[in-house]
Image (cartoon, rainbow, N blue to C red; front, side):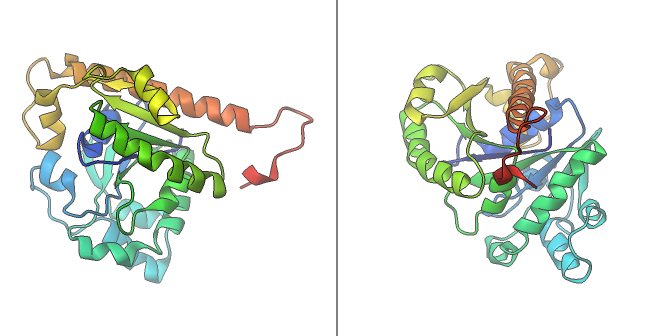
Length: 268
């Protein structure tokens, strides 16, 4: 495992809530990168309930990199601790800051990929597809791109309009084999199989529709006594395992067998 990017075509269900649920269920130390360019860091204002100032994050990293370049040390200086072996690189506070980060995405993607050697995996909250100054280099460099969607017709239709363009972009810059989908609340009303047919990409599985538990991640609500056994937590754990397996399978297909010539397209 290394870098997984999550994005959506609509604002709800929230990518940020899904990313946090997956991060806390992850089987290895995990860093959440808030790369949603809509601004107002949802994690700082939501999960952390405004208890942490906005002095660290992507903007601080970009400023520091002008003098010292993008390094893992500079990255960790800008991160916050979310929990045991769970970390956050906060996003921007104001959408007006987004334009200044366009040159940061490519060098940052290299630093994030290198974290795997230190035993840390990265979950990128890329926000909504198609927004101005979207972090496309992070999606292109990710081991897989997971599109998050609800099951209502407007949700599925909006995402289906984005898939062809994104798949084409990923193919041009490498390959699109890692493009897949994650469903929030299967059967409300459409099933994973129906959505997979509509989108034309693999649906890896679903996370339960569980608004009360989701409030823990989205607005910092106090977890109930049985939160760890809630549908959201249980299905997020299953999805974390599924995504990890998906990436392992992708990598296995890209590694040539002994004696086979290596595909130069995938050389690093």
